[in-house]
Image (cartoon, rainbow, N blue to C red; front, side, top):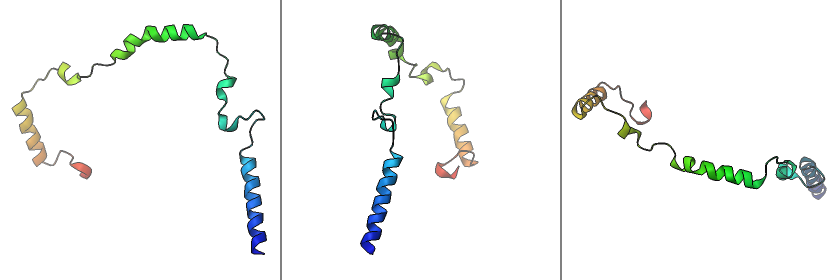
Length: 98
């Protein structure tokens, strides 16, 4: 009796699994064949030429050092004193206590 129950459960689970994975007849399981359904309107050489033309602007990227470009209006000792005052007044977040 126990073996029959185990076999019945295995058969039902196999049937449910096959039903859940049913797809188109061409084997498009989980949408893995989506590239085949796309029709391109541009040829490869045009796309590559456009990419090569855009590459110099892309490779430069944004300016990395924004702090160097910003002009400061305060001196370092004044900022350190304000930071110390804010820390003593518990206005600065510390770790996970914020």
